[in-house]
Image (tube, rainbow, N blue to C red; front, side, top):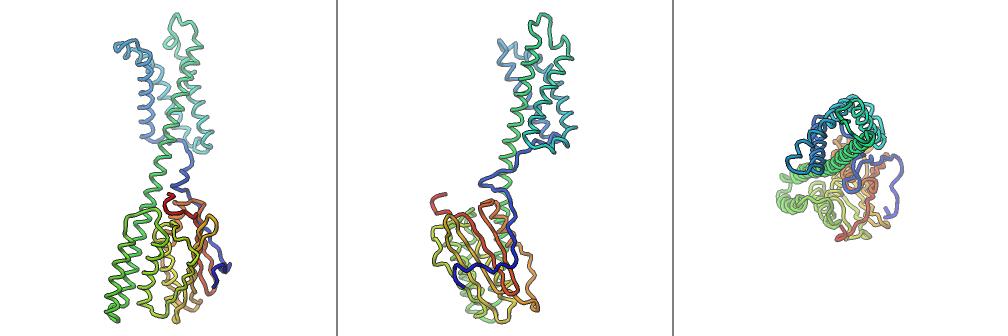
Length: 361
């Protein structure tokens, strides 16, 4: 097969879209006002801001408690009433777009402040007050400001947590692929231990080198040449077991050696091709690996023959391929594409990801 030959278009499966830990965060959303932690944070931050206001208005340390009591007299009913209303309105707020929800919460805070100030009578409007409406507007603006500060805090906290959660998810995916790789590579060596003990001894040494590379410090991206070396060592182990039944055509003469890709990206594709494509065929077959750069993109294609309907291919749980999809989505978002095309007698996986050079990240 020539390098520029496209995979045969029979069936197509696109990679599911997902958010990226590198570029995007989860969509903005209002906090869950029915959550106890959210309620406690609102109370603590609001009272902390009230204390700052009391300190700014007081003429001395002895005046701070009096100022704080005056502020709390209006703040407490607004806070408690607002939290109760937000608890009741949570299902309705969940249906609103984020900025519409922000507007609704701010309007609620403003209306509550004006209503409580008005119905509070002389408690909030002491005798001799020159301009009661000025005080009302001032308190309303303070309430809206505090509400905006709270919503900004919860939005920032959500974005920080979403990045942390995505990073943790990527770590879990890396942790899952390594035991899977270990298990299948050991199986490849076990297949020749009794029949070819000397070759098995050499294979164990190769496997030690292979795992030293595969189990190195976890990174989001590794040099492409390292991934190629690891994949060739894996194929060499499988060829000890399968002999001439397994052939690989490496069309990598145009690949950029300085490119970076996610670790254990190519090897699981080859493992899938061997296990599901070559092994069920009595005569074996050849796997074609194509790697080349196209503009600002790096393209990788792995194609293998497929057992006919009369044969009994391995079932498999496709964990490795799903793992690749998820890692690509997390690392590159929509900049990476994962395509699977299959027909009666072939299976082809093509991955496109951004071309990144060593030393630029």
